Amino acid sequence: MNVPASADIHPTAVLDDDVTIGEGCKIGPYCVIGAGVVLGRDVVLKSHVAIEGDTHIGDGTSIWPFASIGAQPQDLKFDGERTALRIGARNTIRESVTMHPGTGGGGGVTQIGDDNLFMVNVHVAHDCQVGNGIVIANNVSLAGHVVVEDNVVIGGHSGVHQFCRIGRGAMVGVLSAVLSDVIPYGTVTGDAARLAGLNLVGLKRRGADKAHMNGLRAAFKSLFSEEGTLQDRTRSVKAAHPDNPLIGDVTDFILSDSDRAFCQPES
Image (cartoon, rainbow, N blue to C red; front, top):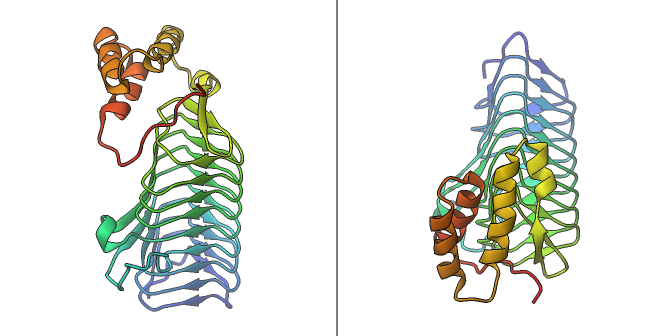
């Protein structure tokens, strides 16, 4: 194992010889890092962090005590095949978070993007695809094969059913069970999550164009009216607003392939 001079490793940490350590890494007390793990530059492991498997952690990511990263997925079909976990740059992974690698039947890779915050006790299951700029609050669980697009916020104690997708810029309220896909920029709430409207606050914070937001409001009403099927309404809305990128995000999301239905407003 080649340890850069700029790395700081506590003497109680246990590292396999087949670990790659980037410049400026700080590995705190009682961390255990297994064979094949790759740490980028300036990764910080606070203490008592366990990392194993084919796991790569990007530059500037910090991981807090008692997190378990890269352990065997909780899938009874998993048979020891070589799979991977890829975590991007500048993520904050707080206490007791668990993240599992992919499975052979699910593409083989769990992917985490950049600049995300995973609060205490978050679970990211096998084969999840998590984007960038996401905030996931305490005690949230993402089941296997979940897709979370950029700039999503998920409230505490919520759960996302396997194979569900949450579109970019969406917000999930606290204590919500997400059983269906959530459209981009949508807000869902409730123990069986229902679509409650649009996450306009999030769009404003990210500097979205006001005219595009107004167009999205009108499109939302058209999409979830009672005339025709959702797919037909979506095609009509897409054709009527070719130059609005927010509407394009929503309509493309609805028209893409999915294994789940969509969260709908209360009737």
